[in-house]
Image (cartoon, rainbow, N blue to C red; front, side, top):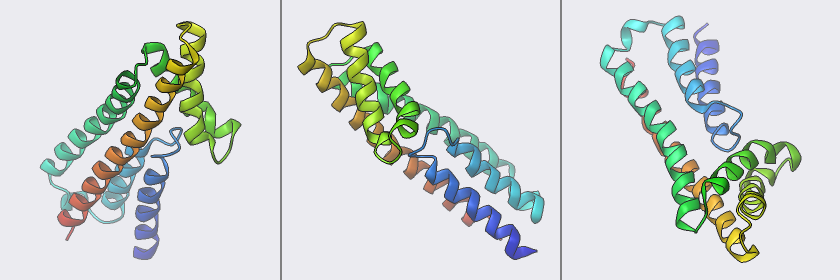
Length: 160
């Protein structure tokens, strides 16, 4: 039974990292699922109250890092709110339209299209906004990946 429990816990952590590049998978929920599975299979008593408080704070940081990295990336490269929304839409739709490369092309195309359509930006500035959305996405993936690693390391330190 222990092998099955640890397999499910590790699988939830692996899925959380897949969720970094596929936004339809809620990464932070899968990290928490690993913690909850541990509590159900072994003992919630092994996970003290401060562990849960820290994990909730890290989860809030995950959401903040996601939004902030995208916003800063688009803004820094001259984009607008329309570019940010287009980037987000492209991030969600891209992987379904272009299976492998859509995760990178989607935010770029979404930001460029939004800037061209809604702000009537010149193509050069719209492309620059698209590059910003791509930089923001990659920064977000790196930041969220680091935060998730810290969350899992804290879990490994806490369990007996």
